[in-house]
Image: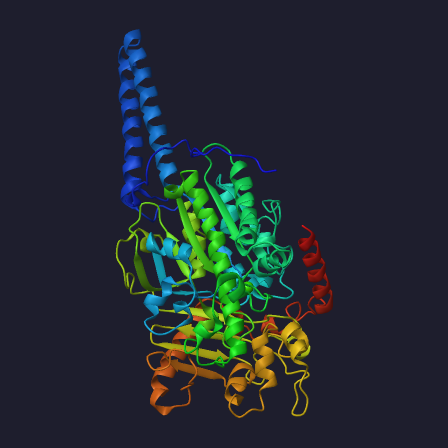
Length: 619
Ligand SMILES: [Ca+2]
């Protein structure tokens, strides 16, 4: 049974939205200096008053009247100063609600308009993400640093490049280095009440380490929201209506959030990390239509060129969009709760995901936009709503942003840059012209994708007009070795659909993957198969003005030679300056133990997952 909590603001603060210009960062002293000056000015004023009063008793040592007056004056000055400081802190230290969905790419209906061409965003309906964008800011060009769960999150939680997070730079075999500062623990140390539901940092050891492991977990109300289509389908099969099943699952989101809120101290600012994994495979085939009314046929002509526009693939994508709508519904529960407790206008609401769609070409584990571009919408207390920002931003930007919101000074030398200047602006379009690039990359994803547990090293530079990719080991297979897929042999469709390690293990098992592999000898689909799984040249270059889907590599076209040279040099300089081990080390660490140690036994993982599912089903 969950505790009822007060519907009053825990800050006891009936004020409306604080002025956006009133935000400050007392510890960093970089953002919003005018407000900081005014607070410090008041403190200085009261202190001067006190000194001035002290002089009086020094002259008239026995004038008790003046001593009393001096004391009253000092006390008043101190009170004024403290109250100003408190007001300042309350205005700056917003609560932070961070909804971060696993494997959720750039799929939300608010992007349909900004895409300006037919896309999957025409089909998906995400009213709650749209609301955050409408009342806040929608980032058109937001990118993760690595399209793989653990390295993406290592980077996003620390603000560093993924390759500068020790063993957090890989997926299987990741170990967290607790000497790396992360914003959740920094905010905790600065007085925030922190809590999380579900996935923050995993797979890796210890799980969720950058968030204090499971010490701040609020998951007692249930974990069904992590497997929406499975959980809802199971309930519907027992005779429940879709609406009732949805309500029962969403009640768990509310229960966990309520438990977190109930555990705060009065007036304590908070950070809640909602890490739903429902957009991570697996999901129930046909659930997009059954649970969310998404007709696979409605995707016709809207899916990217590298995906075969065939019924099996359309259904798989529709199911993924359904899970994305589940994320939206889960977000909606928390937004509603914020409204009910009167804290909407004291809370920074941030919605994003850790990379593109899993189990499809060009998505997860790829450096094309479909792999590394993600949704990012932020509602800023008191900020101007309805803005669409063109600046290229990076998920690691969230680390210094959250630190500054909490009044904590970000460490030096981060890849991430605070978003506060963009958030406090009232402009749309390009705000900071220096934000015209991002770097992305990957090393090892699953351990056993290729011989010797080796990674597939890549880096990319994304600019408004081009994507430049460097494949550092083009003799390796980007999605993992073909294994059982030979000239004459093909694993069973079900094996490819259900078991990631059957072939090309860096692409999650899926109906789309199985369809592509089993149709590879059909001349109509050979290009799609090669694009998805084939080896790639050392350099790739895509001209976004002509090739939005990034399917036509112009790296060897002489017409682009100068552009390729420019982007290559620019990227290599950025990587060298960032001390990327892949570029600066002679004996590259990622090619050697412990980065190439055997990972977890895939069979054991499968068994553990089954066990968890059984347990979840019972709950
Ligand atoms: Ca993920």
